[in-house]
Every structure is written in C-alpha cells, then in structure tokens.
Length: 311
Image (cartoon, rainbow, N blue to C red):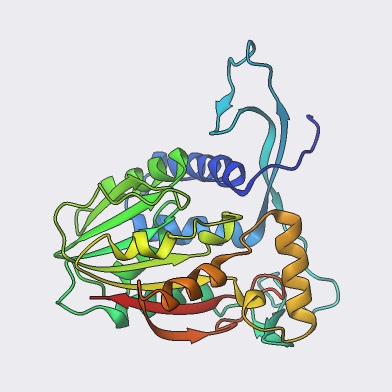
C-alpha cells in the first residue's frame, strides 16, 4: 500500500471517474444497456460505499502502468470502494441505512430523511429554465454527464445538443460510454478548463442555457475575466451556478466557518463570488438571481445558487 498524499481535486476526479468507468463496464458486461438505470445503480453503489485513493509520486523513468494526470505522473497504489459505516447515533431503517442524515440549512443543522434525493435538484431546476428559444444545453465541468442525463430524464428537450464540457479525460470517456448506449438525445463530450474557458467546441449555437454544478469548487482561483469569457460564448447566454460559495457571500455562523475551513484544507475555490461581483460591476453580465445555501447539504459543502444572463 502506498503512502497517502494530498493531491488536487483534479487528481481526485481523474482517478474517480476512471474507477466509476470500471464499475459501469462491469454493469454493461452483465447486460445493462439503459444509461439512466446504470447511473442509478452507480449512484446507489456510491451511497453505500466511500471512494478512497492512495497514491505515490512516480519517477519519470518508471511510468509503466501509471496514469499521467496533468501536472505530473502519479502511481495509484490503491483506489477502491470501501463500505460506508452507518452512524451509530442515528436509528437504522430495515434497509440497513440510517433513517436520516444531519445536514445544514443555512446556519442550522436539520435531519434530512435518507431517501430524499438532492442530486436531481440541479437537473430539475434546469428543466424548468428551458424554453424553445435556446439552441443548446451546456454543462461546464460535467464529470461523466450525470446532470445532463438527469435533465433528459426529467423532461429536457430531445432536439438540441447537450454539451458535456469536462476537464478530466476519464470523465469524458465515461460520458461517451453512457452516451453510446442512448440514442434518444445528442450528448457531446468535449474538453473544458475553467482556468482557460474555450468554447471553440460550439457549432454555431446562438442561444445557450449553461450551468455548473460543484465544478468550479475544484478550481482554487478562476481568472478575473471568467464570466466575461463565458458571456462571450454566444449571442445570448443564460447561466446558473450551483456551487458551494456561500461562505464567500455572508457569514451565517458556525457552518460558514466550517465551510471556509474545509475549502482551505482541500484547496477549493475562494474567489468565485469576488470575480462574479466584478463582472456585474463592469457590465459583462446581468445579475438575475442569488440564493445563499439554497440546498441542504453537509455543513461544509452547502450549495448556493447564482444566475446571470447576457443578451
């Protein structure tokens, strides 16, 4: 077993999506062909298992069997699922999981029933944002495309392209694998880097419905012109960000302190809201909505929502 090290969020997802791809490959090999069902089976597995990684740096001359991930070559000495242990302080359901989990709502902690699925909330939000004036749906930092598949499942359009713009190669590969199983919509996996936004992958679409979901969180600093670049992607852009930036907006007490502490430890984003306010002040985008700590979540990872438009 290798030495446990600190690694960037990009490393985590590069390795994590690859391990999920292996899980999906096994499902496909056992006859699963419906990507929506596969995503639910993967989600159920993740709810019951914790993904853990051990890595060691590898010498440049010893790269056989290694994964080259962006800023260096890393040897995965252990990447595996480990069963999650129930909280002994919370009663169990007959299914073997805790009857609820403690989550944050603003400054307060509340009990959320375990079978409430908050992972679909961004997709349902985006379905309600959709109208026929848009030419495409774009997710920036899409991972393996779960949100986009959920948008389709909850009533999204079937006659426009869905762009799954992703930084990691393994995330793109898994998205493409799932997309190849479903001919009901046009999902396109394309490379994207939040630190250097590039929309050359677009094919002439003029009106975009765009969003991010806990993706910018993995980038410690976005560029000062980040929103200006996003706004320049098309003639009209409507964009929603589902990100854990609440601690950057207003201090609401202990949960804010906890979020700030964890963000610093993990190297997550600290300048999203500052850069957004600058874009508003300079007139690059038009502010339309903000809700701090909009969704229930862990006290250190509450989802806030901000929305803007251009054109």
